[in-house]
Amino acid sequence: MVKILLGRGDVYPDRSDNHGGTPLSGAALNGHEGVVKMLLGRDDDNDGGTPLLWAARNGYEGVVKMLLARDDVGPDKPDKHGQTPLFWAIENGVNGHKGVVVLL
Image 1 (tube, rainbow, N blue to C red):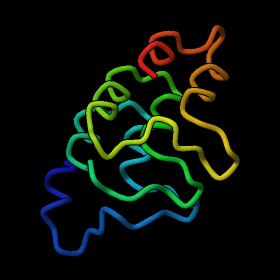
Image 2 (cartoon, rainbow, N blue to C red; image 1 turned 90 degrees about the vertical axis):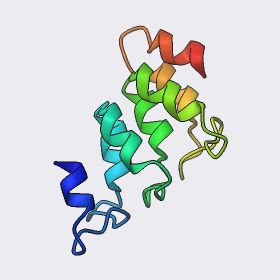
Image 3 (cartoon, one colour; image 1 turned 60 degrees about the vertical axis):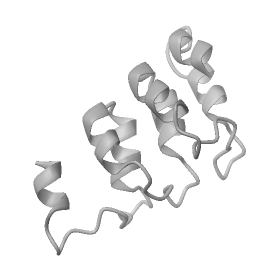
């Protein structure tokens, strides 16, 4: 479905929603690795949350690993509140997202 939508001239994959989230941030937030691959290279959301931050926050190791393999992804980039992907990986989850913490 994403591939079809990206092929349309009236779909804007970099456009933010009413909360400042981009499609790439949403895909990372929900652990959709295939969609993340299709949307890589798009902008951060308006809250300063990067796709890496959202994937780390929710414990999606596969997405984190994919993003960290890119040269243009900064693993220490904070959101507008000063929190990094590592902070969120540790903060969320009962015992933190250990696999994501190790990757970061």
